[in-house]
Image 1: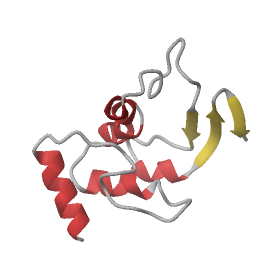
Image 2: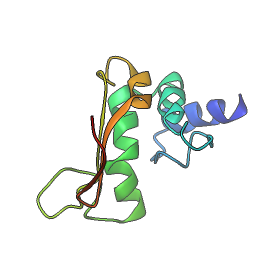
Image 3: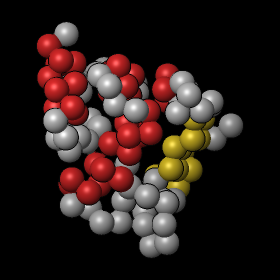
Image 4: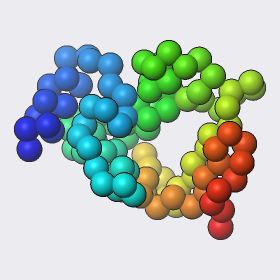
Length: 106
Protein backbone atom coordinates (compact mmCIF):
# COMPACT_ATOMS: atom_id res chain seq x y z
CA UNK A 1 0.00 0.00 0.00
CA UNK A 2 0.95 3.62 -0.51
CA UNK A 3 1.34 4.36 3.23
CA UNK A 4 3.91 1.56 3.59
CA UNK A 5 5.96 2.95 0.72
CA UNK A 6 5.88 6.42 2.26
CA UNK A 7 6.83 4.98 5.65
CA UNK A 8 9.75 3.03 4.16
CA UNK A 9 11.09 6.14 2.42
CA UNK A 10 10.69 8.28 5.54
CA UNK A 11 12.54 5.71 7.65
CA UNK A 12 15.26 5.30 5.01
CA UNK A 13 15.88 9.05 4.98
CA UNK A 14 16.06 9.37 8.76
CA UNK A 15 12.70 10.97 9.53
CA UNK A 16 11.93 10.71 13.25
CA UNK A 17 8.97 8.36 13.58
CA UNK A 18 6.45 7.97 16.39
CA UNK A 19 4.20 4.94 16.71
CA UNK A 20 0.53 5.75 16.21
CA UNK A 21 1.12 8.48 13.65
CA UNK A 22 3.41 7.45 10.84
CA UNK A 23 2.59 3.95 9.59
CA UNK A 24 -1.17 4.08 9.14
CA UNK A 25 -4.31 3.83 11.25
CA UNK A 26 -5.73 0.58 12.60
CA UNK A 27 -8.97 -0.54 14.22
CA UNK A 28 -9.19 -0.40 18.02
CA UNK A 29 -7.48 -3.48 19.42
CA UNK A 30 -5.38 -3.94 16.29
CA UNK A 31 -2.95 -1.07 16.89
CA UNK A 32 -0.15 -3.61 17.37
CA UNK A 33 -0.26 -4.21 13.61
CA UNK A 34 1.60 -0.94 13.21
CA UNK A 35 4.65 -2.75 14.65
CA UNK A 36 4.32 -5.35 11.89
CA UNK A 37 4.06 -2.73 9.17
CA UNK A 38 6.98 -0.77 10.58
CA UNK A 39 9.21 -3.84 10.48
CA UNK A 40 7.94 -4.75 7.02
CA UNK A 41 8.93 -1.22 6.03
CA UNK A 42 12.54 -1.86 7.03
CA UNK A 43 12.59 -0.72 10.66
CA UNK A 44 14.22 -3.20 13.08
CA UNK A 45 11.85 -4.51 15.77
CA UNK A 46 13.64 -2.75 18.63
CA UNK A 47 13.42 0.58 16.81
CA UNK A 48 9.69 0.02 16.24
CA UNK A 49 9.27 -0.56 19.98
CA UNK A 50 11.27 2.59 20.69
CA UNK A 51 8.96 4.46 18.28
CA UNK A 52 6.10 3.55 20.63
CA UNK A 53 7.98 4.47 23.79
CA UNK A 54 11.05 6.69 24.05
CA UNK A 55 10.88 8.23 20.57
CA UNK A 56 7.17 9.04 20.83
CA UNK A 57 7.65 10.73 24.20
CA UNK A 58 10.64 12.66 22.86
CA UNK A 59 8.82 13.84 19.73
CA UNK A 60 5.80 14.88 21.81
CA UNK A 61 8.00 16.71 24.30
CA UNK A 62 6.88 14.64 27.29
CA UNK A 63 10.00 14.22 29.43
CA UNK A 64 8.65 11.72 32.01
CA UNK A 65 7.32 9.07 29.63
CA UNK A 66 8.79 6.48 27.32
CA UNK A 67 11.26 4.79 29.63
CA UNK A 68 11.28 2.84 32.87
CA UNK A 69 13.16 5.20 35.17
CA UNK A 70 12.83 6.81 38.58
CA UNK A 71 10.27 9.66 38.55
CA UNK A 72 8.78 8.53 35.22
CA UNK A 73 5.11 7.58 34.92
CA UNK A 74 4.65 3.82 35.29
CA UNK A 75 3.04 2.85 31.99
CA UNK A 76 4.13 -0.72 31.25
CA UNK A 77 2.95 -3.38 28.82
CA UNK A 78 4.24 -6.96 28.83
CA UNK A 79 3.67 -9.38 25.97
CA UNK A 80 3.95 -13.12 25.50
CA UNK A 81 7.11 -13.94 23.59
CA UNK A 82 10.09 -11.92 22.41
CA UNK A 83 9.05 -9.07 20.12
CA UNK A 84 12.63 -8.64 18.88
CA UNK A 85 12.41 -12.14 17.40
CA UNK A 86 8.69 -12.10 16.50
CA UNK A 87 7.14 -8.64 16.31
CA UNK A 88 3.67 -10.21 16.13
CA UNK A 89 4.03 -11.02 19.82
CA UNK A 90 3.13 -7.35 20.38
CA UNK A 91 -0.44 -8.49 19.73
CA UNK A 92 -0.27 -10.89 22.69
CA UNK A 93 -0.55 -8.41 25.56
CA UNK A 94 -0.59 -10.13 28.96
CA UNK A 95 0.04 -7.27 31.40
CA UNK A 96 -0.92 -3.58 31.38
CA UNK A 97 -0.04 -0.91 33.95
CA UNK A 98 -1.04 2.75 33.43
CA UNK A 99 0.00 5.47 35.87
CA UNK A 100 1.03 2.72 38.30
CA UNK A 101 -2.41 1.02 38.23
CA UNK A 102 -2.59 -2.56 36.93
CA UNK A 103 -5.44 -3.07 34.43
CA UNK A 104 -4.55 -6.50 33.04
CA UNK A 105 -2.49 -9.29 34.50
CA UNK A 106 -2.33 -13.08 34.17
